[in-house]
Length: 358
Image 1 (cartoon, one colour):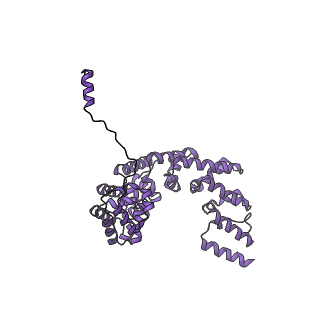
Image 2: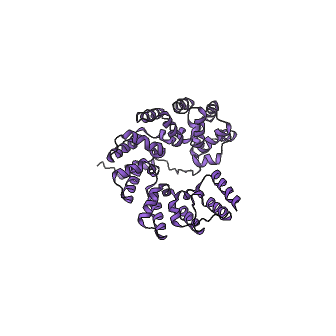
Image 3: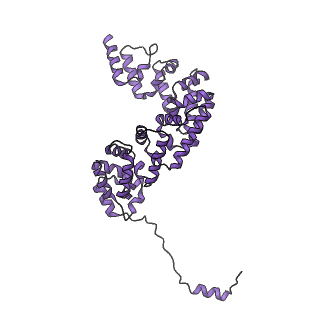
């Protein structure tokens, strides 16, 4: 260790000017010109500021370039304002990168306006990444799995974030699905992947851990063998694979407890849920509310189990329709309740006939 004398040490201190640093706690100043431009373009500045406040501190942005580019593709001024309001970082992209990315999307979509509609609904799917090579690789990879242009179009429309995923993430999910299909005895892993993606396009933007947890939940909860599990996840079960596993378990537990409290057996509960897995999407409040609403009008639990689609209907619609049917002389307690879930046109035609018979 090097030792210094006290004298040298004190001298070194005396040579340093004494100063106090003042740290400002003020927020970074916003770019006033940018703010003015965005207001002129019809951007909801408050929304944009809440979403991505850092954009407003940038000294160099491309909002005018972006506007010209999107106008050339058929977007209206209002659409452009909405897009920037929802994803302000869009104004940081340059026209060259946007043009290249647009061309890649156009290989999938039939027209520019279809892309504009996606951008208005989900602008982050297009503007979040400027890695066009990754996008190109994702398209090539998904084509290699056997997805047709029509399938890619549906995927881009329903789950556009898939294409801004890293290529490795998409590969991991596809490989996981293929391994799952082989473990369950499916003889065409690529066809299995295509089938799952057609029923649940959002699955590629979820983790393999989540999907595996839901597959394990289905197998253990309903005591399914490999063949039955394969049939389920190739069919209605595909839609719940990307749900939060906590949500899946919580909703099922509530369904089970509610039905058991109304006199159903465990076997009846499982049969009911397997016959209509969409019920897993219903939260405790919605499921219990709809069941109670039906019971109040003397509909039995056995009728509900026989016609589970009535639970797809909102509580307000259920109440309105049951009131109208009772007024028309329809006995809900002894009649088919399936008409509660019919389309509005079909239901109104039936209601008209009932009223004419009164």
